[in-house]
Length: 398
Image 1 (cartoon, helix red, strand yellow):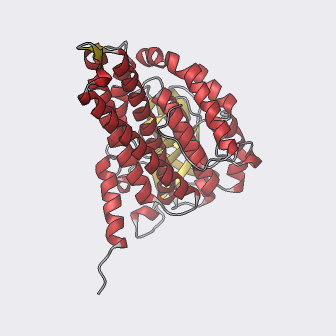
Image 2: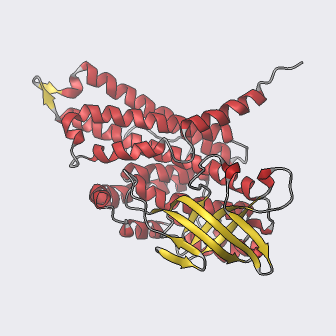
Image 3: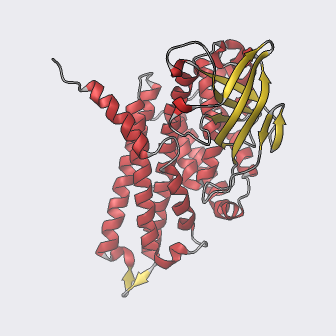
């Protein structure tokens, strides 16, 4: 491990966990990632390896069979895994968001039912907020849960579910009629159980198939269609309707730290590839790393990698402290994703024509980095969140 993206103040246990994850990435992920990605093949062996490492239960409390670690530990593991292959980090991202929401908002019965099996990876979670006509505009959610004698009937269409096929538990945001004045208090999160796979995966629930994407391959990104899916009121997250929006936003905050960590991992790997290639490739009788233009580019890349990592770590530590950190999460996500794309493009330029070849890893990173600009809200959305909060904090007096 090089000098970049190092984190001060970690415990011996955190260091040991990260060392194990680094070894896993070096031996089990990087050697086969590009081959699996080009084949759009699900990384089954890697997922089993992460189960053995305890990654699925990293933040789940020990009383439920997890490791009880912090968001910081989780984010640093995600950064390392994304350094190997971003798609693999996506397997645990939505799983962790659902586990986190259960930990923070679930009833005791829901925690007992799901968290022990989520810690082992037997239950795998997916997170469902977006719809075909909405992304960050959560107020426009149209999927409805209508109350009836047996609980609720859910009807609507959800979009962009990572792990939508492979998961067997989905946290679904719906619109419910609670009679509240605010649209945000008329939303409820349901815990929907289903079978892994595609087609009809539960009564009234259809997962049509994988969405074909330019990157982020290997894992399944799907739609999910509800047609009168009957669900018990016991499956309302926290047991109380009308809390869904606030529960989801809590989950999104940690999701943004996760995407920032993934962007940091991709950026670090792009730098590593560039600094290695620039010492191997010779032009005009010397390694291209000795040309000032390339040397300056490497220096800028390294600085951006370090800045993004620092912002991500700070956001994770703030969340661990229990403080509200929507601004810090937004800043970290925005900076890390933008710098990730800039670092990857710089690495791509250093590789020259070879970077355009699918034989070289940078080609995959070039496609994967684009997703970082979109996942968990675009940079423009982050700027809106940051700007509005700053106006409140710095409001003129009198």
